[in-house]
Image 1: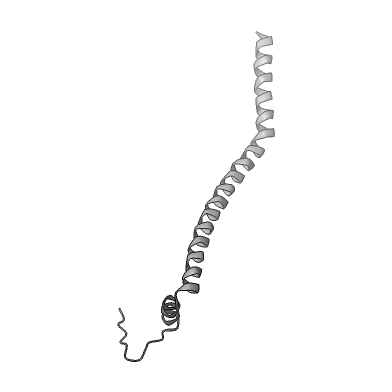
Image 2: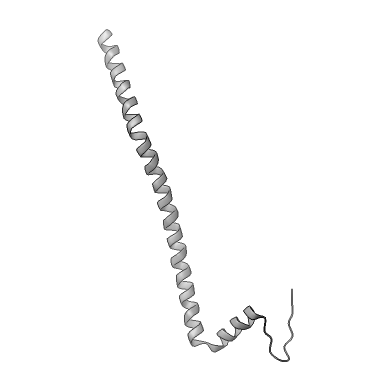
Length: 87
């Protein structure tokens, strides 16, 4: 009986030591995985935004009416005879 108690206590002590050794590393690994997931989402968003900006750049280079419309919206410029309706 005494030998079984020692074995059980030894196994318990071994698991306790292993837990103390590996738990901080496991916690850090989980935190790094979460950060990585956030970075991947940010990259996905930025890639999508990059595509949108590329499309807008093409419009700016090829469509003078688009450039005029954007400039007028940004600067609040109206053509002679135009009426502005505000909401």
